[in-house]
Image (tube, rainbow, N blue to C red; front, side, top):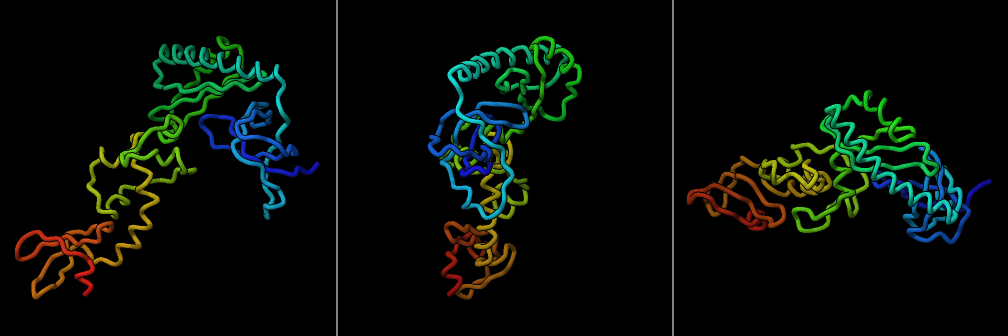
Length: 265
C-alpha cells in the first residue's frame, strides 16, 4: 500500500533524524511512534511536520512507521531507558577490567529488549572481541557496539562556541565534512590549535563553510607579498582583513593599515 506522507523521526541521540513514510495525517512534533529500523522495532519521536509524498520528484527509499504505540509499549520503552543506564555501568566496569580505552556514552535497547547498542568514543580502533564474549552473559541480550566521533558527541552534548553563539553542529549543520588546516591559512588565521579548535577538540566547523566566502572576497585584495604604490610610497603587503576591508602593509614608516577602497582609487 502506497503511503501518503513523509516525516522525519529521531530514534537515537547520536544519529540524524531519518525519513519514514506513513498514512497518519495528524502526527505532532515530539510524539512517540513505532518504527522498524535496521536494529529492529524501536520507539522514535516525530522531528518534523508531515510532507505530502507527491511533492518529492525522486523516489526515496524509506522505512514505514508502524503506528502509534500503546500505553504498555511506552511503559516498556521507559523501562528500557532505565535498563540502559545499568548497561552502561556494567560495560564500563568490564571494559576497565580488560584495559580497553572506551568511553561509553549511551545504551539503546530495541523495544523488545532483544538487542542493545552500546555507543562509545575512543582515540582509535578498539579490539572489543573479549568484551563481546562477556557482556551478553551479564546483560542477557545481544550486543552491538557503535563508535562515534568527537564531533557527534559535541553535537549531542551542546554548548556555546568561541563566537558566543550556539554551536553550529547543534543549530544547523547536518553533515561533518573534512576540515583541513589549509582552510585556516586561507583565512589568514593564526595557526594556534587552541584558538582554532571547537568544544570537540577538532578544527572548528566554521572554517569549512566560511572558506568559500573568504576565497571569493580575497580576490579583491592584493596578494600577500606583493608590492603596491600609494601617494608615491612603496608598500609590501603583509596581509589583509576581509571583514574590515583593510590591507596590512609595511612601508617607509613601518607597519601601516590602508583601507582597500583607498588602494582602489
